[in-house]
Image 1 (spheres, rainbow, N blue to C red):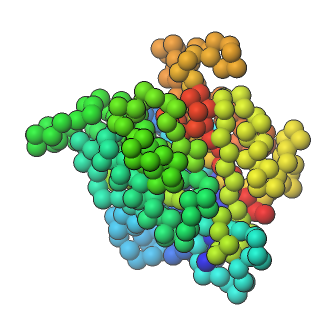
Image 2 (cartoon, rainbow, N blue to C red; image 1 turned 45 degrees about the horizontal axis):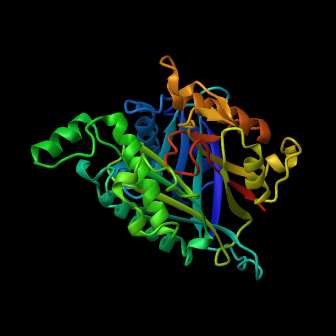
Length: 369
């Protein structure tokens, strides 16, 4: 199997014309697309319509090429969107494809290539959000995505992107009418619990934690519980846990690989550099034009430090009533990482609860070897 990854810009949240043009030119085969990760210019909150708008536009466009209903495509193609392109960030989306080897052999012994796997959980009821049931649901989906990619060991997994459902007012009312109890009925708070449960699920699936370690009461409380390879988003536009697993495998061919590294805090340029160096890219201080052309996608997860300090100095992101803290941190990390890479088509997602250290996060890069 061989993976291919392409990055496309968008003129507005429903703009999928760049991908359509690539399909028309024969550069992309629509049937080979297995997943999408993108960054839209919405607010990133519960009412961010841009994520669903992009997904609808994409599935309708692909439906025309594949002759498959858009709803059917939506149920089998993970489309993970993060809203919020604050600061220098540019709206874009990354398309993951896979196809049989095109006559080329597997990589030489000791050499690995990018592997991509996907999976969907069963629909998640509102009462399961932020609870052990969601943790187990995500863990099972991650393991299914690993099998889909042919990744036999958790050590082969570099990066796991998950999109989780949240509790809306309507979903909360339905659950309560059925006599179910909710972890929270607050939609915004439910997104945080969903991300926490997603991170716990990835940690469980990859053996970073055992089930006995993952007490529900630790969610959003004990931030020593974390996954170093999980990037979790939540939104109203999904009803299941959607999972994309990226790894490096000797069973796959092609020129691409993925590298992931933890960032200790929002100023951790060394963490950015280590992730890039894992892909054979050495910024000094910025990535060269030649190496920049090798990069197919950059994915960042970040969080304002809850202790109110960065590198020992006070920050005010959590106290600002005018601008949400997540918008602050997306803008800050977008500028830092874009500056190192020299390209502002960076996926930067806030809400990194239990995803890397408190106040930090993680960065993954997919690039040509």
